Image: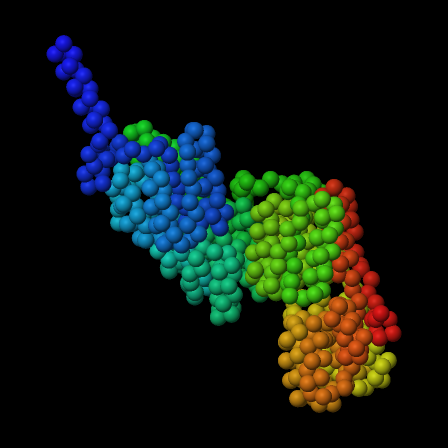
Length: 595
């Protein structure tokens, strides 16, 4: 009996110890025990970069295949947010933290705190400075950048002027790639510019534009990732330059740019393999297996000679439509009634057909429109309808869309330098000739007139100015011609300046109604009586004509342009052929027919 009681007492004590574990300095027993839940946390620097999207996809696929839970946190290139993300992952009880640092120094404290709680740590692509982690998995960024820079030397020769686009300050990949670039360039090339663009495409474009303005004879560019390289390509294309651009990462967009001859080369890492390797080794750590402190993943130079063996994008058969059957519409601005009506026509037609339409407003910002188009492509659209801010600046983005099998229709304004599937627009030249002839017929030949020009580079602005001058240069006295960017406020300001310089102007042709209405305000404020003719037949312009404040306008049919674009996009999705050009009729609107 005593033996039974003793045994029962021992069991009670044992259960009591289990139910009331002793915690010393935050440690719950050994670090290996850690009460972790057998899951993995992945803190990635950004998901606004295809390379890291692919890395995360590789990690998630490997975890799913292994039946292991993985939580992915996107820091959005914000080091402070990443520290918070890591703390959240640790508090959620992950067993292994995989971290791709925004800044290799800034995450040190958070990683140390994770390790103090028994969490194993693997870094991917970029190092964590100042702390010994379990494993680093990365490409040899120094060697890769040396390979890329030597390609510039081999292609252009020694001593040529080159520029460098540097990645995020403090990121180990940025530091290593810049080191590799300078290891070669400082002795073999003339580095005239080196500037940070934060691994970002839009910043890459902006920085490159500034570099070209300061150093117009740059012949080569090394960008520390493909996003900056592709931004540089857009800037170079917009400047009409021929500059060799080499990137780093071999993203799908970069591969397509090399195939199209827009980029020279890139360094192929294997982000999906980096992600899956990290998960494979995280699982080994959870099973108490030993892994290597450093696991290199091979890099390769990708040029036009071997580009067909890289990239996830598949070639499409002629006429084959890719994507998910949806349509994207990139409009230059929704701050203009004409384009509001165009979008309404497109949306109504899409709704009636039961097709998905995504509309993005560039806000008259060329850089944003390029980014908008790239975002639409990433959503796997089948047809892109584009109304360019600038007919030249969108060329590269449209080429990239076509390279992925996306069909392209332009509306109202052309896309220069690339053959698209269809252009739907009014005859802007004929419309402007009609408007200008109305001025001649109303005021007579030889009178003094002024012209308000649209956005520089926009095909509609170019064509309408051409139509105006086709008539005016022979029949009128053009005393002023100035850009007002299709904007009412600018139209008013420019007209005020014109009237101060030329008080005897008696007629004005404005390349759209917004500028025309601005001119009307300026003329009214100056107490003048001047005939103003616009273009677009917006509701405001029609009311101004009825009230006798404007003389005439050219009626396009923006709603019909929008609906016609959708109807033909659906034909493309259905595998049908459509005309390369679809004109939409224009008409002169005066007080006689404004009702």
